[in-house]
Length: 134
Image 1 (cartoon, rainbow, N blue to C red):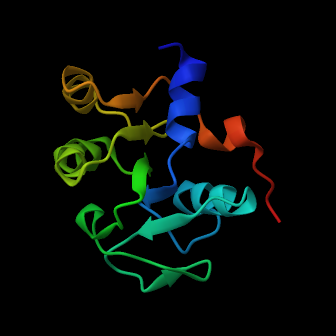
Image 2: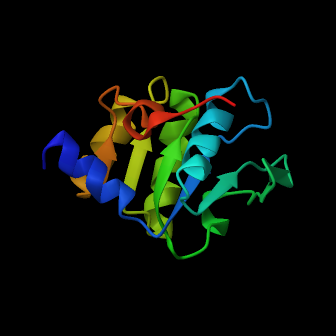
Protein backbone atom coordinates (compact mmCIF):
# COMPACT_ATOMS: atom_id res chain seq x y z
CA UNK A 1 0.00 0.00 0.00
CA UNK A 2 1.08 3.56 -0.61
CA UNK A 3 1.28 5.95 2.35
CA UNK A 4 -2.02 7.54 1.23
CA UNK A 5 -3.74 4.14 0.98
CA UNK A 6 -2.50 3.31 4.48
CA UNK A 7 -4.01 6.56 5.79
CA UNK A 8 -7.29 6.01 3.92
CA UNK A 9 -7.53 2.46 5.34
CA UNK A 10 -6.78 3.77 8.82
CA UNK A 11 -9.45 6.49 8.58
CA UNK A 12 -12.10 4.03 7.32
CA UNK A 13 -12.52 2.63 10.86
CA UNK A 14 -16.02 3.17 12.36
CA UNK A 15 -14.36 4.49 15.55
CA UNK A 16 -10.91 5.34 16.88
CA UNK A 17 -8.92 4.90 20.07
CA UNK A 18 -6.42 7.49 21.27
CA UNK A 19 -3.83 5.66 23.37
CA UNK A 20 -2.01 8.15 25.56
CA UNK A 21 -4.89 10.65 25.58
CA UNK A 22 -4.23 13.52 27.98
CA UNK A 23 -6.30 16.15 29.81
CA UNK A 24 -3.44 18.62 29.25
CA UNK A 25 -4.47 20.65 26.19
CA UNK A 26 -0.84 21.46 25.30
CA UNK A 27 0.05 17.75 24.92
CA UNK A 28 -0.26 15.81 21.67
CA UNK A 29 -2.34 13.18 23.46
CA UNK A 30 -5.01 15.86 23.84
CA UNK A 31 -4.56 17.51 20.44
CA UNK A 32 -4.95 14.22 18.56
CA UNK A 33 -8.17 13.49 20.48
CA UNK A 34 -9.51 16.99 19.74
CA UNK A 35 -8.51 16.64 16.08
CA UNK A 36 -10.63 13.51 15.67
CA UNK A 37 -13.53 15.21 17.47
CA UNK A 38 -13.20 18.36 15.32
CA UNK A 39 -13.64 16.18 12.24
CA UNK A 40 -16.66 14.32 13.62
CA UNK A 41 -14.99 10.95 14.21
CA UNK A 42 -16.23 8.69 17.01
CA UNK A 43 -13.23 8.58 19.31
CA UNK A 44 -12.48 6.95 22.65
CA UNK A 45 -9.57 8.18 24.80
CA UNK A 46 -7.47 5.47 26.48
CA UNK A 47 -6.06 6.62 29.82
CA UNK A 48 -6.13 4.54 33.03
CA UNK A 49 -5.95 7.66 35.24
CA UNK A 50 -8.85 9.71 33.84
CA UNK A 51 -12.62 9.22 33.78
CA UNK A 52 -13.15 11.58 30.83
CA UNK A 53 -11.15 13.87 28.58
CA UNK A 54 -12.70 16.69 26.52
CA UNK A 55 -16.13 15.46 27.64
CA UNK A 56 -15.57 11.96 26.25
CA UNK A 57 -15.59 8.95 28.60
CA UNK A 58 -12.20 7.22 28.85
CA UNK A 59 -11.42 3.55 28.91
CA UNK A 60 -8.51 2.33 31.03
CA UNK A 61 -6.88 0.02 28.48
CA UNK A 62 -6.88 -1.01 24.81
CA UNK A 63 -8.78 -4.19 25.78
CA UNK A 64 -11.64 -1.99 27.04
CA UNK A 65 -12.21 -0.33 23.65
CA UNK A 66 -15.55 -1.20 22.02
CA UNK A 67 -15.49 -3.62 19.04
CA UNK A 68 -16.12 -0.91 16.41
CA UNK A 69 -12.66 0.55 17.14
CA UNK A 70 -10.41 -0.86 14.40
CA UNK A 71 -7.81 1.95 14.39
CA UNK A 72 -5.78 3.45 17.20
CA UNK A 73 -3.46 6.44 17.40
CA UNK A 74 -0.58 5.94 19.77
CA UNK A 75 0.87 8.96 21.55
CA UNK A 76 3.03 7.04 23.98
CA UNK A 77 6.75 6.80 24.75
CA UNK A 78 8.38 4.24 22.40
CA UNK A 79 8.92 1.66 25.16
CA UNK A 80 5.22 1.89 26.09
CA UNK A 81 4.27 1.58 22.41
CA UNK A 82 6.31 -1.65 22.26
CA UNK A 83 4.46 -3.05 25.30
CA UNK A 84 0.99 -2.09 24.04
CA UNK A 85 1.16 -3.16 20.38
CA UNK A 86 0.84 -6.93 21.12
CA UNK A 87 -2.23 -6.16 23.30
CA UNK A 88 -3.74 -4.11 20.49
CA UNK A 89 -3.31 -6.96 18.02
CA UNK A 90 -4.82 -9.42 20.51
CA UNK A 91 -7.80 -7.09 20.85
CA UNK A 92 -8.29 -7.14 17.05
CA UNK A 93 -6.99 -3.67 16.20
CA UNK A 94 -6.29 -3.59 12.44
CA UNK A 95 -4.63 -0.19 12.03
CA UNK A 96 -2.05 1.49 14.26
CA UNK A 97 -0.80 5.03 13.77
CA UNK A 98 2.30 5.73 15.85
CA UNK A 99 2.44 9.49 16.09
CA UNK A 100 5.90 11.06 15.63
CA UNK A 101 7.91 10.27 18.76
CA UNK A 102 5.88 7.14 19.63
CA UNK A 103 7.52 4.86 17.06
CA UNK A 104 9.39 1.78 18.25
CA UNK A 105 11.27 -0.26 15.59
CA UNK A 106 10.41 -3.64 17.10
CA UNK A 107 6.73 -2.69 17.44
CA UNK A 108 6.66 -1.58 13.79
CA UNK A 109 8.29 -4.85 12.70
CA UNK A 110 5.83 -6.82 14.88
CA UNK A 111 2.90 -5.13 13.08
CA UNK A 112 4.36 -5.65 9.60
CA UNK A 113 5.04 -9.35 10.26
CA UNK A 114 1.35 -9.74 11.16
CA UNK A 115 0.10 -7.69 8.18
CA UNK A 116 -1.26 -4.91 10.40
CA UNK A 117 -1.57 -1.51 8.73
CA UNK A 118 1.03 0.48 10.69
CA UNK A 119 1.80 4.14 10.05
CA UNK A 120 5.11 5.07 11.65
CA UNK A 121 6.85 7.12 9.00
CA UNK A 122 6.69 10.50 10.74
CA UNK A 123 3.21 11.25 9.37
CA UNK A 124 1.12 13.19 11.85
CA UNK A 125 -2.66 12.88 12.11
CA UNK A 126 -2.86 16.59 13.02
CA UNK A 127 -1.30 17.49 9.66
CA UNK A 128 -3.23 14.92 7.61
CA UNK A 129 -6.67 15.83 8.96
CA UNK A 130 -5.93 19.49 9.66
CA UNK A 131 -6.00 20.46 13.32
CA UNK A 132 -7.22 23.81 14.66
CA UNK A 133 -6.31 24.83 18.20
CA UNK A 134 -9.33 26.65 19.60
